[in-house]
Length: 403
Image (cartoon, rainbow, N blue to C red):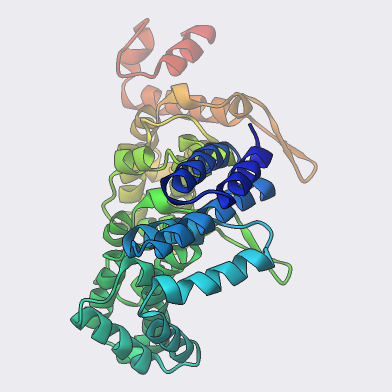
C-alpha cells in the first residue's frame, strides 16, 4: 500500500454517505497514518494524510460534532509540511472559522501581537480564559503571544511575573517539539544569565529535554558565522553556574527519536558537558584561581569519571598533567586514579606533532608523572609487585621498566 491507495479510498468515499462514508475515510486514515509513521517527511505521504484529515474534519462538521472535527483539524495543523501546498492552506483557512467559533478573536489577538500591541493581545486571551473559551486549538497562538510579550517586556517585568508567564506557557498543550518551544527555552537561557535566582536546569527539566528538535543540537550558521547549538549553550550555563545536575536523568531523557535520526549518542551528550568543564578549568588556571581550579578538578571526576572515554575526558587529563606541577604535583596521582587510566584513548598513546615539534604521548607523560609521585611519596612501593592503590596501567609501566 502507498499514498495512491489513500487517494483512491478518498475518491470512493465521495460517492458514499453516512456511516459508509465514514468507514471508507477511516480506512484511508489508517493507511495514511501507517505510511506517515514510516516516512513522516515524504511529500506525498504528508499530502495523503492531510487531505484525509480535511475530509474527516468536514464530515464531522456536517453532522455537528465539533469536538471530533477539532481533533482531526489539530492533527492536520501538526503536520510539518516539507513543501507548502496552496490547496491545503486554503482548506485550513476554510475550516478554521467553521471549527473554531473563537477564530476571529484569536486572529485579532495574533495580529495585535505581531504589531507589538502585546498587552491588548494578552487581554483578549485573558478574556477567553475567564470565559472558559480557551481550547487546545488556541494554545499554539497563545504560546506565541506569551513569548512575544515576555521577550519585548522583559526589562519591565518582575522576576516573579516572568516566571508566572513561563509556567503559564509550560501548562499549555501546544505541539512539542516545535520552533516556539525551543524559542521559549532560548529565552529562559538568556534570562538566567542576568538573573542568578533563575535556575535554568530546573526550568529545563520542566521544559522536558525529550522535546528538543534536531536543530537544537546542531550548530547553526548566521551570515557565515557558526553559532553554537542551543543545547551546548544550555549545558555551558549549567557548568558556568555550577548547578547541581542529575547526569543519569539527562542521559535517560536524551534517548530521542530526533537525536537517533542524526546519530547523536549518549556519549556525545556527556562530551557536551565535559567541554565547558575543560574551559572552566582552563580559565581558572589562566586567572590564577587556584582554589577553584583544584576543587573543580575533584568535582569533575566525581561527576564524569564513570562515563566512557572520550576526546574531552583526555583533554581534561592533559591540562591536569600540565597544571599539577612542582608544589602541586602531588595532586596528580589521586586525580589520575579517579580519572581512571582505563579511559585512555588509543590516540593518547601516540606522539603528537605540532608546529614542527614532536611531543610525547599523553599516556606516557601521565604514567611517568604518577611514577615520580609514588617514588617521592613512598619508596617502599617500588619493591611491591602490585599495590591496589596504583592504577593497573602504572603497575604495568613499572614492571616493564624493571621495578
